Image (cartoon, rainbow, N blue to C red; front, side, top):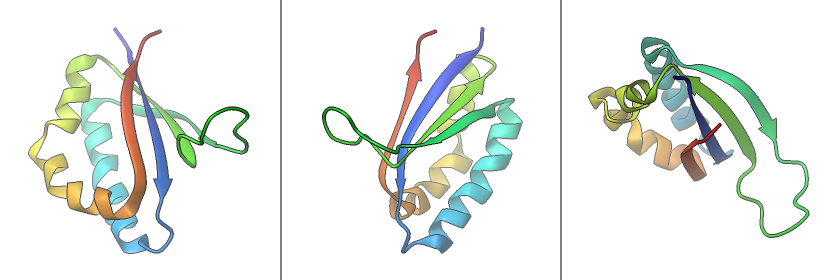
Length: 97
């Protein structure tokens, strides 16, 4: 069963090298897991509350095990320092539906 993951992120513009390293490493991980980025949205306006992030990314994985294949992998663990420097906000959630 397809699993949808929503990432709410804000890129730190002053860390392009870290961002490039993170994205360069995650692309093969997503491919290996059979995941695909469905849509990216820029948050243009917040009508209530505070902005959750600058960008929303929707990713589909073939199943829940594929999500774990990415986020629990040793390859992903190695790039966490890049992620933490590249993003000021980084929230990833599995959503229903």
